[in-house]
Image (cartoon, rainbow, N blue to C red):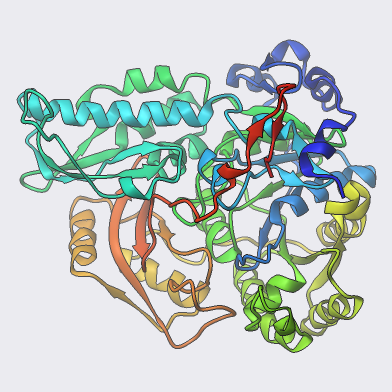
Length: 557
């Protein structure tokens, strides 16, 4: 089969103005970035505000494995499949990050014949949104450091500065650093600090959760950068630089508009990671998509315990919309790994391992049903899958009473997504969603964390470090306790231990650190050994990416 890049280069795509016109967007409302990419300014979206909202479908997945689940390719394939059966559909997806693109995970533009176009631009700098967020973040960080050496009128305690630096690359060596070396005149105030990857920046979450420019400003003002010597929060508003941050983000807030390889319109905007932040594309983009299609397909990062839980408990509360149906993507070999199979040992990839791995799928189905939404399982077909294994997944889903459909969209594009598209439409027409979050906001911080740990992860209880306990007490004392919880943990397990596969029981969630993202509107609980700055693999994708003599990018995936 051809590579993703080869398939994308051969695609018969249209100018972005024609794609916009196909769903009723005036060409003059677009701000083009070349022939196939555009932004849709917020001011232009106002004229479409009166249009009726469409049905919203959320795509999530089983717990991530090296075998691959294919959530994004299935999402794009479903979008194309719905178009194939004559539906007016619009996609709403996240932007890729350079870190994973050059790391081990690769880009986030789908694959095979189910991609968004042009993948080489979307996977790299795209429209510069992620660079703008990094610049705004680092401006605020620089203002904090400068305030310390310019008299510290706000009485900031250098040892309690919580706002770190950021960059969009996997640099493990920057997780923990010392800044300010050389004294105040040369380096500033010497203290410990560190970097987070830009998709973990609070400003990344803010951009994705803001409803408009006024809301963006208000959220930036609420960012807590640290605490005073007497324990009071210090905000970005106190530092007086929010106006400059707004200037940096003036274009980044506008949603991006592209197409699939089959010419179906897609908004791509926002890039928070789901294992660190809330893992969904921007509210602005999804709300725009809801005005232009009869059906909108969006995606939550990583598995249902991460992206989907946060979509339900954080995004839906703030956005005012909720999914009418949810698709859980699973693959045969990923399920086998959850049943104890070893990817490098083909003899372990057995039907017995597959059956044992169903525990992971079942737990995610159970979790999503707690939110009152109908569920469809999508079997993402790989060319290595046997009919016997595929039929075993089908029969298992039939036995537990959940709708299931085959997805062969990597190899066949929208044609391979027709069965899944019909299953989703049938679900939307015959089952009603009764969405409700799983906890109340006025519960204590510890009660909310326990609810997620026990109801979603299957933990017995929650254990806290002394620092986490102290942080929770301080947040509640400062009136910041009535916010939803965003748990940062490994994506490789439902638990906080990446080695635990399937649906582990008899374990405790370990909360190492707690801090507030007041601008984003949630409290972050960092669990287990989760790091907010990833590292590169031994053999990162960067070793294979290049540009040829004709100026064409090669090696992206």
